[in-house]
Amino acid sequence: MANSKYEYVKAFEKENYLLPDTYIIIRVDGKGSTSCGKIVQKYSDIMLAYGDSDEYSFLLRKNLTTLFASLMSTYYMHFWPQVFPEKPLDVDHLPTFDARAVLYPSFKHIRDYFSWRQVDCHINNLYNTTFWNLVLKLKMTPQEAEQKLMGTVSADKNEILFKECGLNYNNELEMFKKGTILVRDFEDYEAHDETGLSSRQKQRLDKKRKRQKLGVLC
Image (cartoon, rainbow, N blue to C red):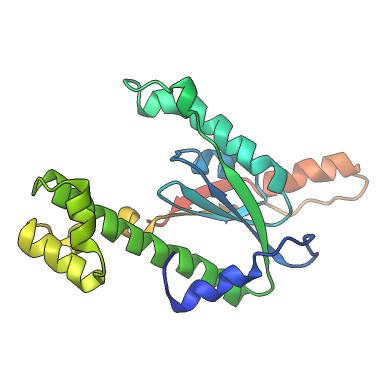
């Protein structure tokens, strides 16, 4: 976990009932997945999604907590053969996901939450990039690489990558350094007179208004 000024938002993770009129974020942890975008497309109540490594966060308009762990597993297994056709899933290593819902009272907390996840992503990715370059390029054992990185800070890892491995970390893709953000951009529709419409017709009209165009920020 990143030791940063944004880490205070973790204190909001309590085992309580979800309160009305608060922002809801669901964080899903798993073992690697490409399911995030499909879930955002399926549910128009998801306003924003952020992912890095095998962790995904969803900003909601309403509570869909109970669906997320199963949805991530379903989409993961469905799309795995398309992404890794040469590596079929093994029955002993099927994906498992844990979903938790957290309430945040203001937009500031929402912003700080996603800043916290990005800081965590950067620290984890920098460590992993340095570790595997030491193992694959410099032929260290995993134990030797772990020992070399013990007690190092970000500046130390950047120096190791640049001087010993010939890699400038700043040139790495932003999606690896900061994660990926999906944002829902609602399209505008002409106003309709809802007089005389049934509740079901109004729901369909509302879904049409919420037809989404997903934007990938990084």
